[in-house]
Amino acid sequence: MADRSNRQVMHDRFDQIPVPRAAVAAAITRGVKAAPLPHRLRKQLLAAAAALMLGTAGLAAFNPVVGQAFDNAAWLSSFYLLHGDRDHFNTFHVTGVAKGLNQTVTSHGLTVHLTEAYYAGATVGVTGEITGMTAAQRHMNGEDELSLAVGDTGATPVSLVSSDFQATKTGYRFRLRYDVTAAPTPSALTLPLHVTHIGPVAGRWSFNLKLHQPAPVVTTLGQQGLATGAAGVTFTPLTMTTDAHGAALRYRMTVDRQRDEPVAEIVALKDAAGHDLIDRRDGLVVHDAGAVNTLPLKQALVSGQAYTVTFGYTPVGGQHDERVALTLVLVP
Amino acid sequence: MTLTAHELSLAKRAVRGDRTALERLLAGRGDYLYRTAYLYVGNEQDALECLQEATTQAVVAVRHLREPALFVTWFTRILIRQAQRVYTLRASETPTLAVGEQAPAPPADLEQHVDLLAAFTQLKAEYRQTLQLFYYQDLPIREISRLLNTPEATIKTRLRRGRAALKTILGGDYYG
Image (tube, rainbow over all chains, first blue to last red; front, side):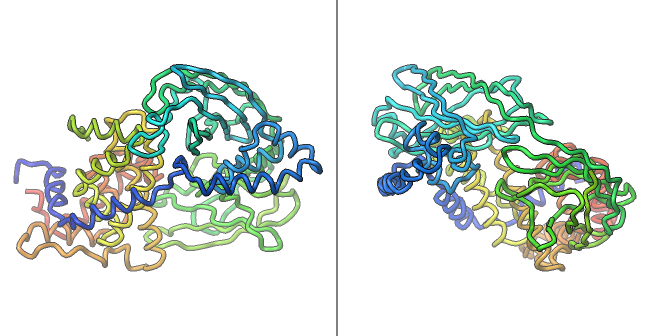
């Protein structure tokens, strides 16, 4: 053993950990079965969607924005609500933030029709429909299951982060959500959307979507770094931004370099009534110590009003988190 | 982590939506994946739950994997993030868990095996995590830094201190 590296020694020891193979296989099987199948044919949901459309059609008479949204495609809301308005597709559809599209490309017998798109804050959503698929093409793996290969977006600063599908008689409805990776987010964006495979069919379905949104309202804040009460941790609010997607507080959290590691993060931000204003609809907000972070909020903070910011941190040498609260009054 | 030709074929099918292929691919690497989760969370039940949850996440996200040859590396990242969530949750529920109270029960006849694992689980949690990612997942320091959202200098400090702590527990001549 004298001539073996530390890495090899540790690797060999770890590889001797007993493995309950039957339980591991069962866990993997359960994990696969638990995955959602939004693209599977669900006849009962199609029937429910029809009922939803009939029930909400009356709204169009009262709200011209809703009427405009419904003009785009009758199935959009029902499709979005299959997944509980994840990624805000239905909200933007109803409020009119999403704009109707009518772009179509046919290749190798399959047609991709883009129906709607939104650009709000740092997210882009695109919805469309695929038609012309045969039963054999739709029944890959013996069931309705869509595989949609989308090519690189090149220099456009976006990243495809999620997608959902619903089967139809001749193809699929789909929606794609992108995150805009540029900061600050541009008010205008051209999204190249290149589909290279639809199920087993290779082809070329290419679009260039020109998107724009009103410039966000950004208020630069005048605070210096605020001591959080956690030893060595300073919180500096930088800007308050309001856009079509909502509001966001950009801030920097710095940590004393004498510490073992930077582990402070914002766990709650409450108004005077005790309501937590952090918007967690898009999942966990991850804090990056030393860098500028963005905290999505349900509403913009108002200068002059007091808010309670709660930080969670691990003290040096500590084994678990502590909490400390700071009263924040924004200064424009 | 290089895939065999058969695994690569399964990975390509998995990316195209073949869930059976994905399941077979993960099952073939089950030992490694289980040990990865186990080293992180310290007990069989949590390790299996991490593996199950990571599998579900992978099924949903695999269609966005651009290079099927990187499937195992990609899935390992998902698994480690899931294990990190579970570890953080358990640490807040059970303060003593971070010092490795739920130690594995290695076979009694593998004395060296007992030495290292028993010592490993006695390490401070941050040292244990870093050593595992460095020595078992073979991740570079930069990758560990990104995964744990911790500066590289801190990662290096943890590696150094973790190795020193292991030597203290095991005796200075452990590494031969």
